Amino acid sequence: MASILSLFPLLILHTLLLVPTKTYSQRGPLVNYCAGDTNYTVPSTFSSNLELLLSNLTSSPRDTGYFSNTTVGASSSAPAHGLAQCLPYISASDCSACLNRSASLAATFCPLRKSAAIRLDLCILRYSDQRFFGQLEDEDTWVVVNPNNGSDPAVFYRQMRVPMDESVSQAAATEWKFGGTLQDGQEIAVKRLSGTSRQGLVELRNEVVLVANLQHRNLVKLLGCCLEEEERLLVYEYLPNTSLDKFLFVYLDEIDPVRRNLLDWGRRYKIIEGIGRGLLYLHEDSRLRIVHRDLKAGNILLDEDMNPKISDFGLAKLFVVDETQGNASQIAGTYGYMAPEYALFGLFSTKSDVFSYGVLVLEIVTGQRNGRFQESGSSPDPLSYVWQHWNEGMASQVIDRSLGDRYQIREVLRCIHIGLLCIQKDPAERPSMATVILMLSSYTVPLPAPSAPAFFIRCDTIGGTKALERDESSSGRTTRKSDPVSVNNVSITDIEPR
Image 1 (cartoon, helix red, strand yellow):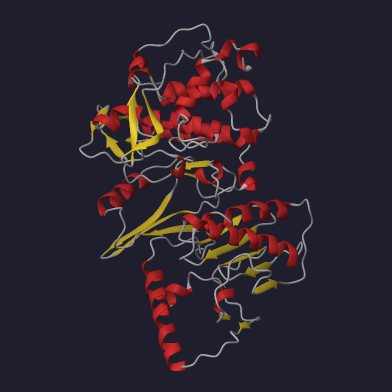
Image 2 (cartoon, rainbow, N blue to C red):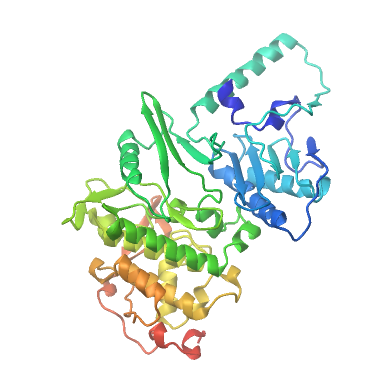
């Protein structure tokens, strides 16, 4: 029982719910709790932290077992602590809708209150200016009674015991546990792999060995581990803003304008540069030479200041000093981010990571995930989409519309140019990460003209599998009158649509 209780906020512990299931569209909450009598003002540090907190809470439970707790602004004078949870059997869209409704109801029932909790049938949302994780509170108790009588109480309690026992077992075996704080005040995140996890012991040990020897501001820090009998735990530094893809990509059932708007161009450029510096450390500056092999938006974690940290080294490969290329007997990673030589032949090197980095850069600029484009199924993937517009002198049209006009066009175009250089067909034509960092930090460094991407990953499928189409014309650069000039010498007429 202790395992399941540790996953629930105290509000649930002293709330007895015996009610029939409703939907998130119900008129009011089953329980609304406005703690204390302290209000906050708008604008203020706490209101800003609370806004980001609610944005995090209303989306992250869908990807973390429908449970999440986090703190925003831990180092500020007015931190906001929060917790969200959905019932495990509901859909992601119902979880999102329920949590967003809870946040709206909190503003209605507890306006400007620094501590509030809303309990609907499908979810619970709680936030406070005071840290409440793992703390016992017994001041308030709520009982919600089902007015219907059971015809046979003994049968009712026997049937109720079955799902309760299953809940205890599932909570004890769940793969992820969440942040909770050490005695010295340090916040941590704990990953617990279940016996049915797809991540094997080899990958886990690989991650421990590699990450333990790496220290860089743009790499996630491994604090400890436990590999004893059936228990497999990894303890990381706690990063409250989860991963980059939760901010960057917007789909029909996952629209979150508040969270998306937090990713302005200044933050995006900082993320692009930070990921690049982390990769440079892995490839050249650390004691080890490491190829990550699974660089993607979901493996870029963000701290409270939106600084990026590369995570998940389960597939990383260590090179000896004189080694420059490896050959994998089994392809592992994420399609859409794989370099062509790796996806087709199993060959990987630091230039494979450069390719993945180029995909990431173009995703950050466009706001679209490679291989999952927002338009019709016949539309090209973002890489082809960007290349087509670049080649026709209309690169400014691919910039994420949510940015409005709040960016430096020269800076964005330079990032597009660098991204295209990183996804070249020939690994030798891709820049090293040292060159990429130099390109990002200095406008005096000339950029060579890019060629078309090596192959396209289209949105249409054949037999349920993504169709890969090699672009035979990509061996040479197509020359035409509309080819864009280097962004070092770009003029207004060159960056505007024609």
